[in-house]
Length: 119
Image (cartoon, rainbow, N blue to C red; front, side, top):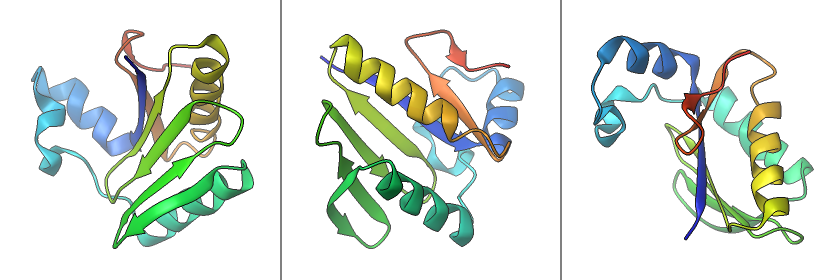
């Protein structure tokens, strides 16, 4: 079992809220792609947060944290956090995703906790 959190562009959040489609996330065309700058900034920021790049091909990069049970996948359209069910890993994944929304370019989606994080 895992705990999953996603980070998308705010345009994706707006589109999903308007859609009313319960299968919205199944179609990658619904997900607004990151700009090159956003993608690179997310990658650099993960590295600054001590995530280790484990594997990468083209635009799909896989990261892990040495101190927590967290794996991350960075794609062209989303940043996907998967953590074990221990409290420390869930907290760390959730806080990192929330901190990445500080520029208002991104929105955090937590399907286990009522969806979009609102401030």
